[in-house]
Amino acid sequence: MSEERSLNFIEEIVEEDIREGKHGGRVLTRFPPEPNGYLHIGHAKSICLNFGLALKYGGQTNLRFDDTNPVKEDVEYVDSIKEDVKWLGFTWAKELYASDYFEQLYAFAVELIRQNLAYVDDSTPEEIAVQKGTPTVPGTGNEYRNRSVDENLQLFAEMKAGKYPDGAKVLRAKIDLASPNMHLRDPLMYRIKHAHHHRTGDQWCIYPMYDFAHGESDAIEEITHSVCTLEFIPHRPLYEWFIEKLGIFPSKQYEFARLNLNYTVMSKRKLLQLVDEQYVDGWDDPRMPTISGLRRRGYTPASIRDFCERIGIAKRENMIDVGLLEFCIREDLNKTSWRRMAVLDPIKLVVTDYPEGKTEIFTGENNPEAEGGEGGRDIPFSRELWIEREDFMEVPPKKFFRLAVGNTVRLKSAYIVKCEGFKKDDAGNVTEVYCTHIAESRSGNDTSGLSVKGTIHWVSVPDAKTVEVRLYDRLFQVEDPSNEDGDFKDYINPESLHILPHAYIEPDLANAVPGKGYQFIRKGYFTLDKNSTPEKLVFNRTVTLKDGWVKK
Image 1 (cartoon, rainbow, N blue to C red):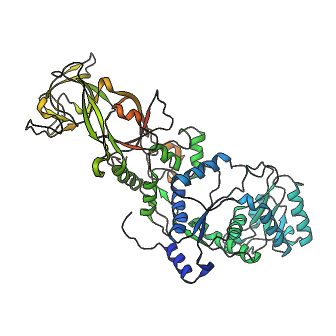
Image 2 (image 1 turned 45 degrees about the horizontal axis):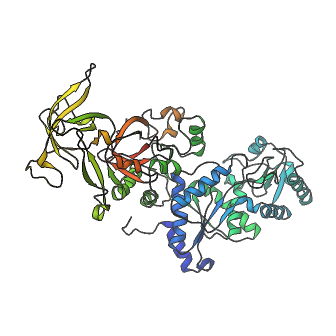
Image 3 (image 1 turned 90 degrees about the horizontal axis):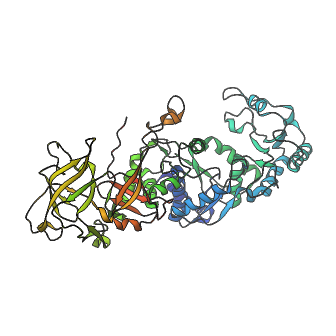
């Protein structure tokens, strides 16, 4: 967005810190995804915030993978996350992993044991849950809480050495079992998990919990502003407690409202269900809210950054209308996409008074919104053309300005034609429309003096290329499927994908490249699917020309 905007509350904090010379006026943020799935549009908001803060204030951003749960993590996810961040237009200062710090985190845990601020607990998860009490009832200590420092040091070393099976013991912080904040009631720091890690292999069989690893990782990297979403507000006192007791760099946590987008789900667990149960064609299905899905659908980095800028940074949760995201991509593609003609539901138009075998070449602008039109392309014209079925009506209503017997229309960039008749098949479907053309009405050199109210697009039959077109719509029929009764998958929109196997494009579109947006004149914005081949081109609809969604 070009207009000036006021500072968000995190920018105000950063500017105050810089004025006070905090951390030497330095700004270092981090984006810390867990590599257990693909990033979605909500992560894009966090990426734009963290990297944007650093860019604005001359700082840097680390990309740090929170890889402390080896069971759910995979190199595939690491690679996809890196690709998404780069595609959005950002460059990280350092690529780091929580697993880089496993030795240091272990040493931190040992230090807390030595301070008698951590202990090894043999209780089961169920027992621990009971012992923690409830928000209105204080927790109760157990026999393990009184273990000596030496015994805890020995048991923790044995946990690290692999002496115990999964779940046999955990390491807990010793804080306050009566705290009104449940996160301070002796939270878990380490659990035993004999699982292969994507980076450290089988070197470790104990893994730190998120709440223990996160703040310490921030401190190790000397992160100045650790930005996360509102659900981590209750975790902040624990974040600060670990830093204070260890006497390490005082990273500070700040919280903002995460992005909630209607007509989709943002939970990684639910997105994984959609993939695993094959409701969608993988994480990058163009109906998914993942960054890779949006990229495949034809969204641009600029449109997503614009969207994140428009929704802003707030302290209160709210639901954002996906219509705003669609507005941002329309705004961008209107300025950048090349115009082309494609007929999605074809019937044949025969210009009966045009010579058989003759071909004329007309010229069309690539982008009339750009200065100079960004050049042009050749459009072949012949006696037989494909037009949209909806552009002819046998019995038209009033104010129908397209083709009907006796009506005249302009063929985009070509001639004015007059409809003289039509032909049906045995089932009563119109198969051909017959027109005559006005030779003096050639586009760009019209001397006919005629004025027509309708213009339609077309593709020359002998020059047309056959392609598959996929029309995508919103994945769910309701605004908030996660809050409806029953299974969220019950609300999937059955019309979210409509495949047209035999659409026709003008020949220049055969040179389309993935990642570039094209406006199919009068039909919407489209992009070439990444799985297209020279033998079979597939175009995905990014968005319609106008918001045509009707709430059901």
